[in-house]
Image (tube, rainbow over all chains, first blue to last red; front, side):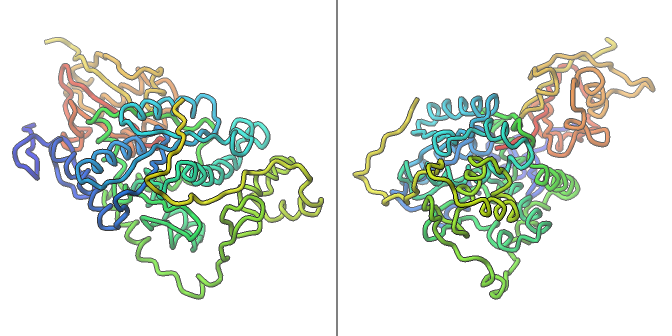
Length: 356
Length: 104
């Protein structure tokens, strides 16, 4: 077969068919359009301003590894003037996270970015290994997800950053749109396509890869020979997401624009005011100070359940009532350290970074 | 003409776990199918299933081709540009399979 020429430069041999556009492009043009599209996403949404301290949520996997590389490249190329950090969460999963954290430690050297690792064990007194030993594999993703979200915010507070960026890509967001539709979760459906979320008392989070296809992220990592870790979590993947994912990949095989089309559909949903009004107002967790829609935040609720041996507490209302009926939380129960938002960035702020 | 061709096959993105946890393999596949057609990518994929795949076949194959979400490169070019399963494998080709399905 005669080599096909790049649709953009019309000089070099095409090496990739872009799922988003169907264009056949060469390696150099691919790097250029990939990086430029992320840059355009960042500038259109005005994600950063000079002097911002930005933490990259880094797992050692493909998305966050490529994100760290591209953020560093764009910050230098376009002079964003932002300070980049790597923030990793150690869930305490032997044979999985300990290996992927080794990748993050290499990334720290390769990209010369300071790294902070925060562990579930330090924060909650429980590793995921210990959680699974107590509750089994069912529902363990709920614990891990709730714990990770809060751990990232707390890690960001330690680093005194104003912003966390995560490697969520277009496929992840399309998957989440589908899941929220199937679950009828109107509140999450309304916000899951936002590139940036910020409440009054949460640290700003955004997704620069919102419009970036997973296929292109993996191809980018492959052609750039980036060092990433890829092993499935040993505690059974989130089964529901797995189905949404397989379905989405089938749709993509039939029509590659399906992913971006689903994101656009998600963005176009308008949530009625009366539906919004019925949603619970945010408050502060009375035990740990983290934002919450109940008196106790989800992490405190889950932790209390673990400590008192009633694992389902954070998961069903019925289990919560049952535990409440047994009396208030005992004295001396392990709790999460009180949460405080970072005081705000300043050039004079120095922080201790754990480089071990 | 020899009866086989030599192909370098690489697995990445976690797929290597299904192939004895070994990323790179050198394999010899027949030049022709039993009905005398030159062997193509479709043939290679089924050959790998029969001869190299060690576990969880459903993570590699779906409907006799690679499962959606697995990227394939032929000599460092996206196989979508090379005719996918119909590409006739040549001696000394390098074929890379990368799963995109693992966490990021």
